[in-house]
Image (cartoon, rainbow, N blue to C red; front, side):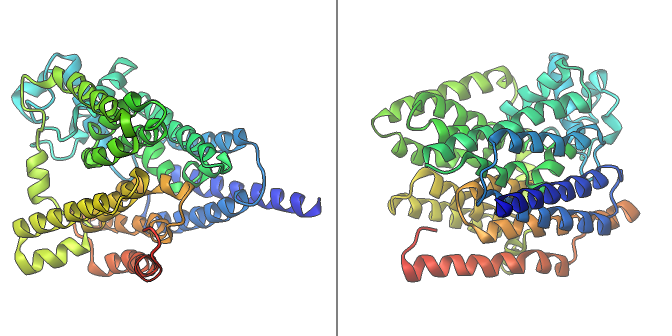
Length: 420
């Protein structure tokens, strides 16, 4: 009895520290990077202790969700402290409400000025049209109908963010695991800061992908719908379709039907203009915080580096298929490999790996979710001199723990024939 009481008091203390450190960060406005690292470090360590206790002690599931909500509330009211992407989201929503295809005009184009909102001056890369796929665009439009404010957008994100936890709890129950392990996602400080705080749209794509896992065997048509929504929010999920087909067995046709029908409905409103915007420019020229890409780029050049690394990850995906990997095992390897070789790795990209921590021991991914905030060092020079530069030493500190732990993971796979 004393042990249980001690564990619960420790849990309460850790969650209080987690709440205090994150709330403090939410009040700082344009957070100074050293303070971000300090506050995030305290929050991350508190999170780790919390998850360790929750793996051993029984806690009602509603407590986890209540804690997740309370942790997010201070960030909902805060402004955008580390990223300005959400202003583009609102602009794209306004273009749709005005009856204009968001892929047609860049925000600074003459044709876009008639529906420009108060956020126009805050949009980054205003000379480029939008990059975001149709499912994301419909979410942007919904935010405009709900008021067109940053808070209305964050409220939508909050629903998707907490729904990730619901999907994870359902997955854990099917595995005979405690549903409270969804705390591995819900209490992690990175989704809290990046979704409730910085308003990044990835919460929708992650939520849809988790529910695609949930539904693949029980409701294959719904799984296809969810997969299409995830891919049409951020393209990352689309290459997993063959694995969903295999996992659904004889109902694979329903997955295909759900995916194709949903994609048709999502893309149909945007077909008067190619629904890709600046995707080609982004894919060909942008880079940030991708050390493997930088090394390959230094050897063969920008274009060949991107083509070569794309071929590597697609080859890996093919290998996963022929080795018979299930959809969830394939997903974590696919997402992880894409991020590891990507020319661009922003902190919120790594959140795509965090849901898997609810039922998998992936120390390298856990470490990365802690070290990736180091890349925000780039804002130091950006705020002072408008110079976008991330020193190699920062990437070294971020990635060395990831590579070492990943090497241990791969060593187990090849020496002991364990699944990656």
